[in-house]
Length: 202
Image (tube, rainbow, N blue to C red; front, side, top):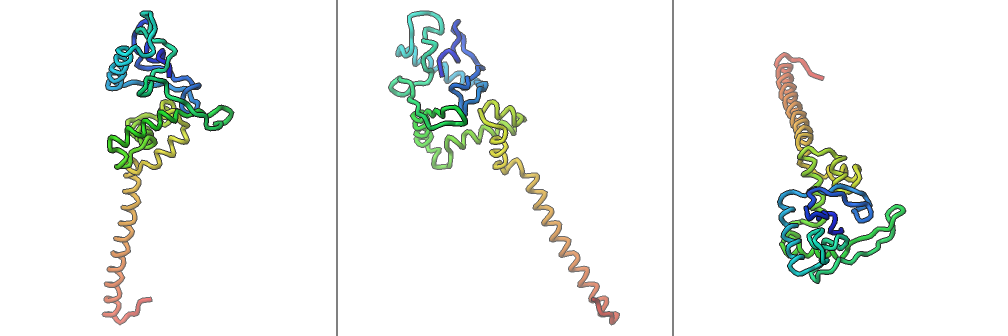
């Protein structure tokens, strides 16, 4: 992701920008929205790059950054390497494997892996939370760079949102069992009544 997506020529930071399909997940152009916490993290990150002169140029535009240089760099202040993984439809499938490995290590070092958190589960968490906060499936798909079908597949795994439906079926089974027990008691009483009147029930 080039620095110019975040930093404008006048030095202002973009809180919303469009990630082009050429570098977007699944080749799907999509908007990226930054919340206040992420904005603060990016500002701190940019200060670090400026401190060490990473991806800088001798001009005042773009806060002194090279607008075409990679925003996200590794611990050696180099752009993360990309790998080709065949093709997705008619386009090459390019994967930032080095960055993925680094994210996996951060998750592991934080002890999150031990409780089942992975990069994929974080994406699923975003999809589910966005939908719970009244985003439409289409809006979630647009921001996540996924298809609406894939969003739907993730949402079907969110058992909590289907709790009312689950409760209904559990309640139906409970009501059915109570009805059977009630009928059994009535039938038992009827037989006693029939026996008292010397009537044989069928």
